[in-house]
Amino acid sequence: MKKMVKVVSRPQHEHSLQEDLLKRKEQHVARGFHARHPLFILEGHNSFLKDVDGKVYIDFTSGIGATNAGHSNPAVVDAIKRQLDHITHISFSTSYYQSYVDVCEKLNGLVPIRGQAKSALFTSGAEAVENAIKIAKVATGRKAVVSFEHGFHGRTLMTMTLSAMIKPYKKGFGPFAPEVYKLPHPYQYRMPNKMTEESYVKQLLEDIEEQFFVDVVDPDDVACLIMEPITGEGGFLVPPVSYIQKLRKLCQKHGILFVADEIQTGFCRTGKMFATEHFDIKPDLITMGKSLSNGMPLSAVSGRAEIMDAVSEGGLGGTFAGHPASCAAALATIDYYEHYKLWERAEHIGNVIRKKMHAWKEQFTSVGDVRGLGAMNAIELVKDRRLKTPDEHLTKKIIDQARLSGLLLLKSGIYENVVRTLPPLTIEDSTLHEGLEIFEKTLRHLH
Ligand SMILES: Cc1ncc(COP(=O)(O)O)c(C=O)c1O
Image (cartoon, rainbow, N blue to C red; front, side, top):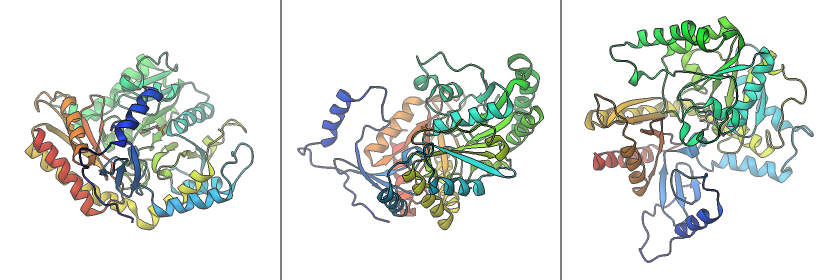
């Protein structure tokens, strides 16, 4: 894979293109769009990004988990170019084209769905979630939806309602969609003192049956429950396997569809093609996006055929839904994942990262928790280990300082005190170690 020459700094007197562009951005772009890193990126190859001033960064963000097969992966870029030479746009609601069907067929064979699966393609992750909810409502004839605290599903009205984290995602945007109810998400690091994981799981599930379904919402009104197998924006919380398995059974008991939002966790990130597989359950519907097409705008809903077909003809669609260039990218991307068994690579990357993170927990008292699955790992930063007071200032400082040293990281979690790592799964070992060195030096410096 193409490598970039590393230029860490430029002479002081040289003009910064970035500063000019930042000024123009402030003048012309709505303030609501605010990047985690104030950089203008010119190009990216595999796990490196280069800004307009020539500075190169190791990328531990993958465009928020959207480029698992590496930036500008040549196999994916070639497939997109070949498609664009034929036609740019058709709209699957006007006439059909083969690559849309090919992607659906491919997904139907991959997703952990019981029996025959069918799929539908859209553009953004939020759109996939919106449509999964539409499908679940029609299939069950029920109106209510259950989601989770700490969850994130998008920025449209329904997905914003399903999500947690008022600031910045929901502030001022109400009223929200009706008939959405939230359950607490398992958070082992912050579970009540003296509880074991087993008693915690038992308590959470008893509360659903004895309180939530009695006081809050009638289970017979609930169309579906939507959950991320690991919360992405919500701090990389990994629920206990027994909790997910029992929750799945509870849904079945009440005729509630189980929707797994795999938009951030899917496509090898956690060491399996889908994170749901770690929990050994079969959801009724799965939403996908991000790394499905290695960074091209494409999302999908797959599910049991009889559920997917509940919506009548014309009930699903969208001008750009399943865009031909994105479908071409998805087919090349999935081939790449399978050819290189990127789930195995994710496992290896995860082991390297977690080993480091556990060592940091020993060395730095601010590292309160280490968690993750496969190559989706995070540290939670606290001011005080006993009280577990979130340290969002330290988190921000670490992310800013790491950037100055050439590493891009992202924060996460409702307390904004989690640093998450989402490197491309194609990252070379030497680059991975270099990135972790920068991360470690940053922690040591700020500790
Ligand atoms: C789990 C999950 N669901 C849904 C979304 C929304 O996807 P999009 O930003 O493509 O609309 C995201 C985005 O981060 C996500 O992580």
